[in-house]
Length: 635
Image (tube, rainbow, N blue to C red; front, side):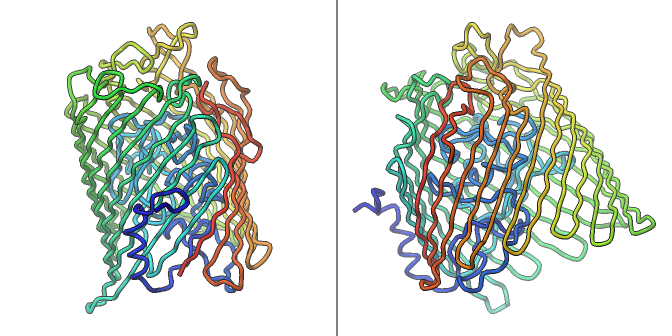
């Protein structure tokens, strides 16, 4: 039996769990919420809708029109993040920040950063329902230097989220034969000692033919969470598995004549414990990740177990601890993480001296605070971090932050100046691919370094918030895939030194029924490839020189809401790109909660309203306009 063309067996376990649950968990909504809460929780029941409240989230739409939501969905229009998808963002997407590359952005849950040791392309592909995590928080500069791990530019941070009893079911269909569904169930109980224990499960599946030929997808995801909490602590256990298949012409090669496919099967188990007291908090997290990747650059041929099959398996185990404690008038922030990974098998990553690696990172940053006159507060944060690997050179890096808080009548201004040096080591695809060919590797690659200095300002007054930053970063030995314009089929991983200059600005405003966020970013790069005989770059110089975003959330009536996200960009010129440098990508979502049907919500969503054809990766076709309608019932 099929549900909208999706095998019903995939929903069986969750259906049983739903039938066993009772309670008041409300249906998933589109509005963003506080960063300390689940990013996708509903505001209120129909008839008692609260005013729109948006804190921590930087986009209007969390649910895409093209499939069920993943962690990538909330980053599509983030003004500080450049999401570069191959087809659907939920299929595969590179996440870059401030002109970095896909391997330069880390992802952190609890007290650990979960790395993708194979390539970095799959860093954001967690088999976890976004409802099980808080809204994403972007860490840069000194925050990233302290809490990041093996990522030289930025960290996207999440925490396990709380939940209540209840459940929801969502079914949707749309253009290009799209069908998707999500089932969720949760139960919470209070123990005799006053602690709260709960569990929830989530099951999702999606299929569609895609907006271009050979652009189909077939996804399924299973996730579960257990939570034990009291007034001072909480413990979470998260487990998930996904099996995702997608096709897209020229997805990784940039040659649209090749109907490429990529199938990933990922397992993730994570345990997290956090305790707080009057002096601060500490948190310890452990995780295990397994990724099986089967990539095919031409689905019309069949290869298995031989070079050219591009079959890989990696495993990684992580243990980390973070703490912030006030002692002797000083706030001490500490982070420690150990990771061990292994390239278990691969048909094509066969060059080089090693297939396993261990990493250890430790950072410590005290913050000294001095109250000044008129309520102003001056802070100084010096710090150090140490990075060790059994396969690479070790590194000790400084960081320094200076801050000034200036209160005013109903306002607060924060000024800051940060310097941080960060570092990382390249992944197995860069190190162990054969040196010739389209994905040429380089076994001689060494540790990468980045030094960043940033001046930033944050001003809040009433319903308004302004943010701004200017930065300069020097990347040394950054790993990039380069080529000569006369031979685009021959690309190789090479080290590059790049100077990056950038500026960011955003303004946010909200009332009871309207929320707006407008942002602008500017980037410039100066690259030096040394002795490498290249004159073109596939990744490092594929960036937006200018990018502007506009997010709008409007509730014109008690039962109806409109959401709009927009991103305009002017890209750096690239000899392989077959479209223009300018693009405008927009998404729209409308939510209707009929007052006569409690717990029911209908959502109409459109992605790429203008059918923009901009190639995120030069030569790779853009996804076309797609729409969907979904019905959700929650109890």
